[in-house]
Image (cartoon, rainbow, N blue to C red; front, side, top):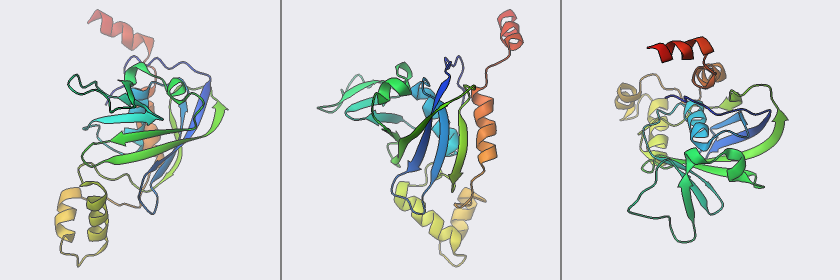
Length: 205
């Protein structure tokens, strides 16, 4: 997962509350991102925040506009909707005057995340930052909502018929855990500007 050549230069950030839909207790993250962040980079922020592995298709939606990871030349957008590449759009431009943007990850498992703008803040950093959150993100390829609920049920009950199978598949996954420091360290590794020396050395290779 990389975010090279990040064109993030901003003094204003948006604080977003990102919540996975239809799950209780809620799985959520409060993240601060530059308002000029590209949507494909916001996708990376969410992948890191929910500990997903960026192995599936995804898109953002605001109103009737969809911002996609790739354009399907064989099928246009549904009637009444528009479609454009996420990497050519910024969060600020996509939102306009709206306060909510929807994120859809993995068109098979169907993870839907609602992002609500809580506030605008002044920031001297272009690195996205996670302020808080609760509970681990649903594991990739667990079977969507039904599979996730089954997984949590099986892990919590040692007498469940699928308990051992789930442990062998997922390891020490704890649905109640969340480590904000781990998220912020990875965000820093992905989004921090590279030193000029490193860039210069690469040119010489």
